[in-house]
Length: 339
Image (cartoon, rainbow, N blue to C red; front, side, top):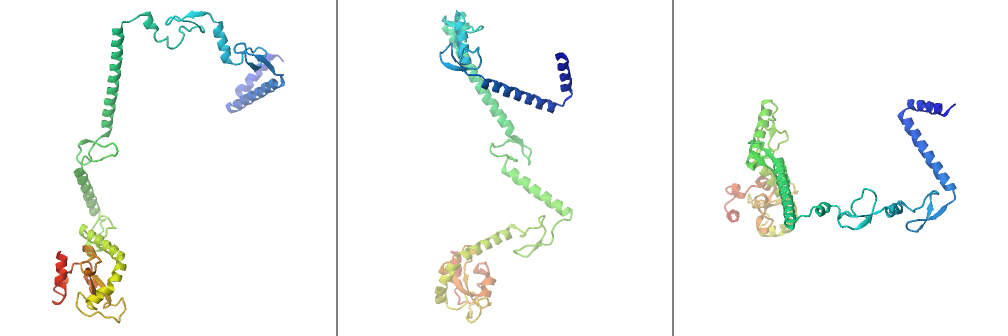
């Protein structure tokens, strides 16, 4: 069988095989060829030579190698090239074909040397170039500023007016008044929609004043801001009461020594033979409640029945002035509250 027929049969067989099989076969053939070449080079005896350019010794890869590396080979070719003068500086140099100037420094000044210009013309050209660069920089800055302003310009969602927002935040409204107006309108719109769809929660009861009210949120606890603020003040007073409990306990003997076992609210005697949870048991009452700004000082404490203390709560002592006897210390307490 001839070599031409073998090549034709191989070409026809390779033409019908898949691409993945062909790529794997080519990779395997290249690896085998490389392995055979490395084995043949390793089997040869090493041949040592001397570089004809730099004179250093090297191990030759083949019998025709004369230079140690490609750099020495290129330097030798440059040395064999004929000398030619540089058209810019006039210095003779050797280089490959196609090289006109001796260095990169001489190349930009070739036109100037062929066509000399006056110093005034060179200065004018330099000034023009500097002015063009300055104008280009200023134009670029102006365009960047305009692009930034255009990117931050948007319409107010409340009044529709155009405004420029901040870089560090995305504003939706041009002012705080527009934001408040939009929020109030949204709240009113949601409330009307819920009430019209009969989804309101009319069975809600205020935890402060026990008034029934309707709201669009089923988890609302208070009927108004006043009740909410009062409840928050009560929680703050409870926190202050827990923090000052130890101090009040330390002051209890001094309060009893000063006032005795007499209730400062109803002016009746406090029983000592009952449990601490009994309505007539001893407690210490804050004359000016903690929720109203009172303190845990000795002059703001008085003994009281538990039931009287609970009934008074966080209210100021003005409501029980008429209730208490005239010989009580209410005139001094009211004076302290006025202060």
